[in-house]
Image 1: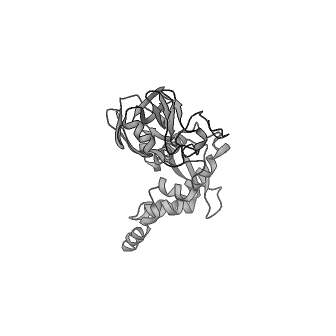
Image 2: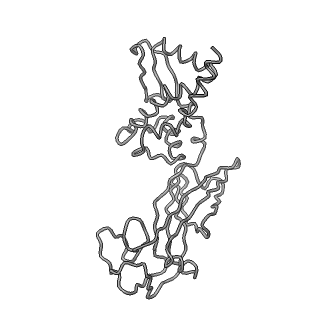
Length: 280
């Protein structure tokens, strides 16, 4: 038996987090999530398995790849098989809502006796025997969101508010309201409103005003900063957007995340400037 403080199983498991196998890899990614108007959900997956030893077990029917899918909001909990490298899992209306966790795995369909896989770490010995239903492959967890929050327009959770208390040329955020309130001095507020009504004004505002605001919001809700915001309506939509785009709120780069959330407004600046100048 291989003894390692990082091991979680007494038998070999193909995973990036250990060296139970000297070669090979296992991964499963969610390619697309589709929600129909009648509430059904389709989840497209892409599976990658590079291990002739584990693949042989699957081919002979001794093992199965797939994922454990869990949704806390609906109490849905089910193990789904992935029979091909690409495929679609279908879920009935109401099965999934809110945060959905996907835990990719490969498990044994029946016991394996005296398995002599060539890629096994020699510390396991010449052969291993593993009970049926045991996990022999693990990949990184995946999280996505189901529901209407992520479909709402991102701009709907922001509110631009004029204020006499803000220094000239400055902006201030209020995250305790139902929407993310962007407080601006009256003159700046009027200028922003005027620019918003022009052709090409939106990309400029998204880059100059909303992108730094989104970065500040991300910074504010990281770690203990989220305390006091989780019951705000804007936070529910904001976090759902992040989950849908695969943005890790705690660790993702602020600038890159803000650009993804706002639909890459910087790349539209050239065209926006041209439109504004043409209408001067």
